[in-house]
Length: 95
Image 1 (cartoon, one colour):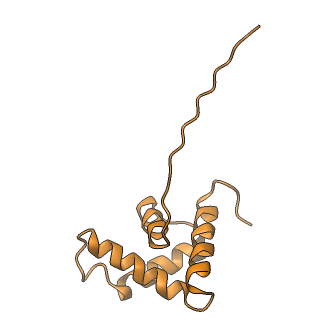
Image 2: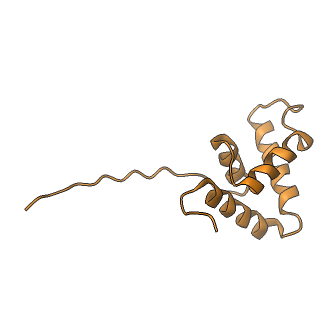
Image 3: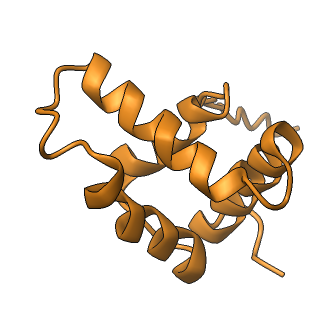
């Protein structure tokens, strides 16, 4: 099991959402398609952002539990999720 707040935990959550959305058999194929579609919408060249070019990269991310932040953000977007930065401030009062 991945440690909380690790990249593997984030990728596992994205994978779980993909399986919920597309099923156990189709999730990897569908998330790659969605990822490529988002990249192309963002203006990435279609030759670079293709299913064939991204397949190995994305499958490796899920296998290793690690990827670049921009990749993780696009994978989250592909399953209808987004990242959120929550900042906390600790105030100490001494008595």
